[in-house]
Length: 121
Image 1 (cartoon, rainbow, N blue to C red):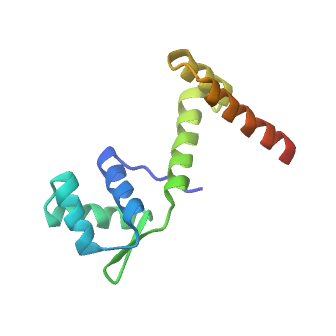
Image 2: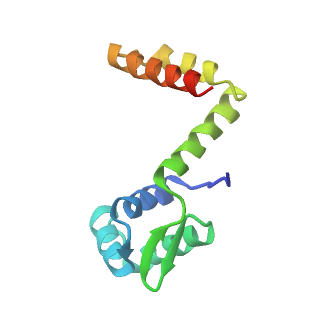
């Protein structure tokens, strides 16, 4: 999968598009003015940059994503594990749970995922 390196502002903008897509670019500018306090040119600049990165596309004034929200955040999570934990998912989980205790429901959901992956083989 292609890596999509977005800054916090670009990520927030992409989240707005994912929430509202397909969306007219003019309507997107209005939402960004309201939610991000941006002027129209700022919206179009960030939109252009995300189009250049292959995350979004502006088709005749209608903005759509080329990468789903789930794909983007999955790739971002994989990169964190690779970069920070040498690719070790157990090391990542150990670090995570050392600071945030898991609820019984969390443990049950994780165990159900593991069991499902074991069955798929």
